[in-house]
Length: 88
Image (tube, rainbow, N blue to C red; front, side, top):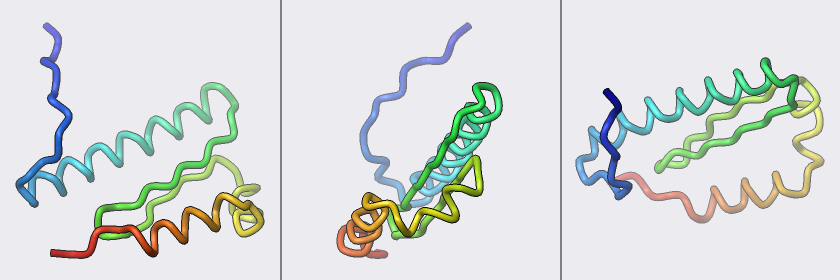
Protein backbone atom coordinates (compact mmCIF):
# COMPACT_ATOMS: atom_id res chain seq x y z
CA UNK A 1 0.00 0.00 0.00
CA UNK A 2 1.41 3.40 -0.99
CA UNK A 3 1.66 6.56 1.02
CA UNK A 4 -0.84 9.37 0.67
CA UNK A 5 0.07 12.64 -0.98
CA UNK A 6 1.47 15.34 1.27
CA UNK A 7 0.03 18.80 0.76
CA UNK A 8 2.97 21.12 0.18
CA UNK A 9 2.48 24.16 2.35
CA UNK A 10 4.43 25.79 5.15
CA UNK A 11 4.36 23.84 8.40
CA UNK A 12 3.13 26.27 11.03
CA UNK A 13 4.30 24.32 14.11
CA UNK A 14 7.93 25.34 14.68
CA UNK A 15 9.03 22.00 16.17
CA UNK A 16 7.35 19.94 13.45
CA UNK A 17 8.89 22.23 10.81
CA UNK A 18 12.39 21.71 12.25
CA UNK A 19 11.94 17.92 12.47
CA UNK A 20 10.67 17.79 8.87
CA UNK A 21 13.57 19.97 7.69
CA UNK A 22 16.14 17.71 9.39
CA UNK A 23 14.62 14.51 7.96
CA UNK A 24 14.27 15.88 4.44
CA UNK A 25 17.74 17.44 4.54
CA UNK A 26 19.26 14.10 5.51
CA UNK A 27 17.28 12.35 2.77
CA UNK A 28 18.45 14.87 0.19
CA UNK A 29 22.08 14.51 1.29
CA UNK A 30 21.76 10.72 1.06
CA UNK A 31 20.28 10.96 -2.45
CA UNK A 32 23.10 13.26 -3.57
CA UNK A 33 25.67 10.76 -2.26
CA UNK A 34 23.89 7.84 -3.94
CA UNK A 35 23.68 9.71 -7.26
CA UNK A 36 27.41 10.44 -7.18
CA UNK A 37 28.25 6.83 -6.30
CA UNK A 38 25.88 5.02 -8.67
CA UNK A 39 26.30 7.27 -11.70
CA UNK A 40 29.89 8.41 -11.18
CA UNK A 41 28.58 11.99 -11.23
CA UNK A 42 30.12 15.10 -9.71
CA UNK A 43 27.51 16.38 -7.26
CA UNK A 44 27.53 19.50 -5.10
CA UNK A 45 24.62 20.36 -2.83
CA UNK A 46 24.15 23.49 -0.74
CA UNK A 47 21.26 23.86 1.71
CA UNK A 48 20.45 26.89 3.85
CA UNK A 49 18.09 26.42 6.79
CA UNK A 50 15.41 28.94 7.68
CA UNK A 51 17.84 30.39 10.22
CA UNK A 52 20.65 30.67 7.67
CA UNK A 53 22.68 27.62 8.72
CA UNK A 54 24.69 26.12 5.87
CA UNK A 55 24.72 22.41 5.03
CA UNK A 56 26.76 21.15 2.11
CA UNK A 57 27.80 18.00 0.29
CA UNK A 58 30.42 17.51 -2.39
CA UNK A 59 31.27 14.28 -4.15
CA UNK A 60 34.82 15.38 -4.87
CA UNK A 61 37.57 17.54 -3.50
CA UNK A 62 37.45 19.65 -6.69
CA UNK A 63 34.42 21.52 -5.36
CA UNK A 64 36.15 22.27 -2.05
CA UNK A 65 39.24 23.60 -3.81
CA UNK A 66 37.39 25.71 -6.39
CA UNK A 67 34.22 26.86 -4.65
CA UNK A 68 35.68 30.29 -3.94
CA UNK A 69 36.28 30.76 -7.69
CA UNK A 70 32.78 29.87 -8.85
CA UNK A 71 30.79 33.03 -9.69
CA UNK A 72 27.52 31.51 -8.48
CA UNK A 73 28.97 30.78 -5.04
CA UNK A 74 29.32 34.49 -4.35
CA UNK A 75 25.68 35.06 -5.27
CA UNK A 76 24.56 32.21 -3.00
CA UNK A 77 26.44 33.59 -0.01
CA UNK A 78 25.19 37.13 -0.66
CA UNK A 79 21.62 35.83 -0.97
CA UNK A 80 21.96 33.86 2.26
CA UNK A 81 23.34 36.81 4.17
CA UNK A 82 20.59 39.16 3.05
CA UNK A 83 17.51 36.93 2.71
CA UNK A 84 17.59 34.26 5.38
CA UNK A 85 14.76 34.28 7.87
CA UNK A 86 15.64 35.78 11.20
CA UNK A 87 15.18 33.56 14.28
CA UNK A 88 11.84 34.03 16.01
